[in-house]
Image (cartoon, rainbow, N blue to C red):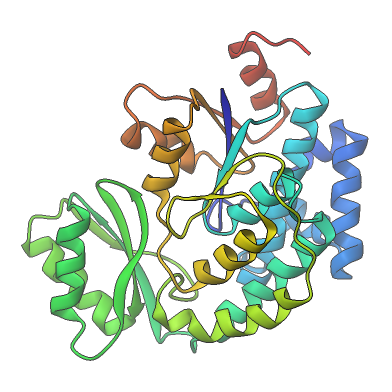
Length: 311
């Protein structure tokens, strides 16, 4: 059984998606649809940069979504489609588009706004994120509790059992990084992000997103989509909306998502979109998991060959 995994912010790179755009009229149409929905040339930004502009949250989110959906569209043309799906943070929107729950033009507009709301929730420089390696979740939670001192520092992403990202006020995150090292963490690094995502400081963004989502039509997914907020499966449009709202200021339970996909019968995990971050994490979450990546046409060819498909 095939599960698609969709990447989130941080997987972007100048040039992403160009191969699909050039190879497939259907993929080109996805980029054109994004341009029309947003009112600017997102395709050109993804293909040519500049990198600093692509890295702006309000640009990164619709760009990664568009590339991921274009890649999935080309995969479908060649006979590769998922029985299950999940996406990391922003990637959850890609999964929901591919599952038929969100119309692509709606999704690309929503994630553009989501990026703006998340960036504007906390003044630049106030917040920070850091990756903690080599400590288990309970240990990281204890570190955060001990170093908060009236500020926010919380678990933001449980990427694998030994890679946990924290977020919050910069000083509190720095204190947590120092204590994690004292507690035996193998490596802790501050992340080059523009805002402290998936923590309590994002609640203003969630409130603004609620208003955006209120009038949106969300259909029941055609395939099970495992949601970030608790590793559960969203089967109805109402569950989808609730999960997307809760996700903004809650941790991304990525380890639980991948484990749930495996428990539901997934045997092959296909990362669809830019980068190979999720493919690398997969091996640390599910022993012996088979993971492949479709970030460009060559990757799709290789994946189809590996799966014994020559469509």
